[in-house]
Length: 432
Ligand code: GDP
Image 1: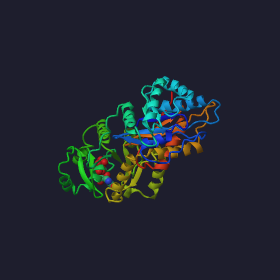
Image 2 (image 1 turned 120 degrees about the vertical axis):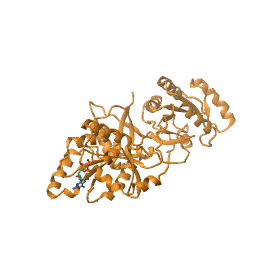
Image 3 (image 1 turned 90 degrees about the vertical axis):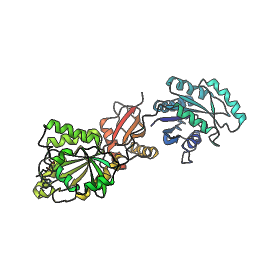
Image 4 (image 1 turned 30 degrees about the horizontal axis):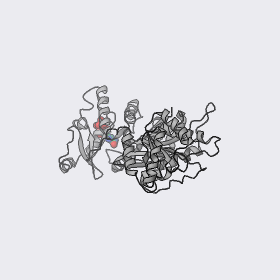
């Protein structure tokens, strides 16, 4: 999501302008001179285009040189922004502080929209034309307070944003796609057969849906699901024909085609390297994951003891996967599968509002700052969620983060927002 930074001296009306852009009078703090505010991001939308507005209120009152402080604040905002809104008070005109900021803005080579705020009437609007002298092009006269000129401004912002990314694949309406995978003999066909009784009826009821002939539509827990590439399981040729290499290609293909994968393990046997390879295929693909321990009917107290140890050791890197203990043979816990799939998919598609994300993040880095390395500690400026399926986050920072600290942030993010059954991706964008 593109970022729009609002930069300007205290009291020019940045908060009011942000309120105007996000279209609600929410708790954007007043622009009181001498009060430091942190950069706060808000979600905004105009004409169907979503972007993040960062309100840079952070004027540092104790800085010796006011102009330098403003320039520094603006600089930070500008590096992380795609578009900068530079706000000037139309009633005051440009000041030397404004001019200092302009120098920096021009060096940054980012698109800048010059806003002459407080242009509440036509005569002030006329005055605003003198702001051409700042060398930032045509000033946009706006009254953030009364809304004057704000529609035009929003159009200008959209025009300045980077090209919209190709529309994120709109999930076709229809059954969710599930890959049922696992090494030979773990019980995939047996599990599939449990769901296949009503298959004919299901296919008929979803008439008009085009389903790949190698897929199956089955009813699980009162819901229709598309199990991808089950042809091999049905004809029971999966293990008879082809090499392990071929089987593994087929598994990878099924995972790619699915939204959520059920990896079946045989609880009566140790977790093997082949099991691990299949689990890695899922985690690398970014799909949601449910691990089903099948043949649970064969697990006695003794086996249970060793299995728990294996799970600790072998599944340590994917503590977020949803785990089920079931038996395709007896039907034990098979009814838990649909709720588990739904939960994993919900996590996979979770979007956290930017303001909420950053409130949480601010508290986190305050309580546990990045450790100091070589006399310096990178700071996290703010975060946005760049996408879903799986959830992807971007952290804007003053420098690269320690791998350990990044894992810490991920763990805390999961603690706060859940994501049970879904991988999440975090990338760090240090300012240059
Ligand atoms: P696939 O290769 O993964 O499709 O595995 P199959 O479904 O063909 O099952 C392999 C063997 O495990 C067959 O003999 C099944 O009867 C048996 N099996 C499958 N599920 C269970 C289960 O829950 N408990 C027990 N005890 N055996 C099972």
